[in-house]
Length: 208
Image 1 (cartoon, rainbow, N blue to C red):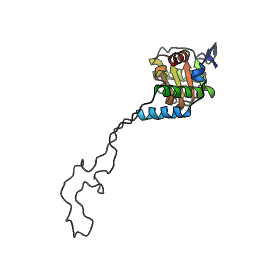
Image 2 (spheres, rainbow, N blue to C red):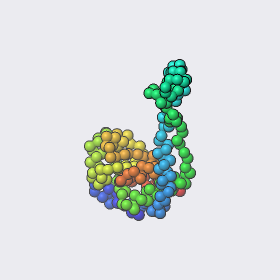
Image 3 (cartoon, rainbow, N blue to C red):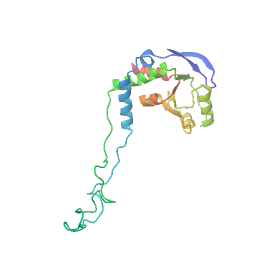
Image 4 (cartoon, rainbow, N blue to C red):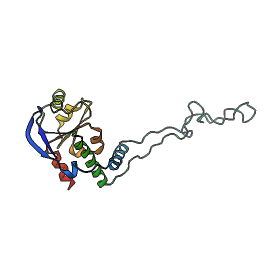
């Protein structure tokens, strides 16, 4: 699959890149994508939600009233969950949500997501560029020039560029990551995938 490479002013550079078929042209595996997305989201959870049960509540242990003859239900402590300020029954406790996934499954999921983007013609190639200083307006104009859209744009760089990252930080519809950080969830979430020329070569090299 060949794609034209655009300049940041929106015009074609005249160069075309060939996207590897074993990365951008495979038969997508939906279940692999599902497993990888579930794992990614699970690994983002801190698992530190915690409530106090009746053994942890600071209340008097004095019995509220006589056992019998009070005309109502018997109660032994204000720590019981039926009272305001009492302990919670079966509340959340800290837990570990992380899970593992085989490297081959993750690779299949990533290639499947990239293949979907290629099928949908949602990949835009742009030639390498640099920004002298963080300029949000300038970066937004670049996205407009290359017709990346204004919803969920994933901009992938071959290497980290602090000025480009800072320029995108105030744009709610754009995320800038390096090729080292690319993952199935980010690809699936994006409406448009913008790749700087060279990213496709790094992905192909890692697939070998």
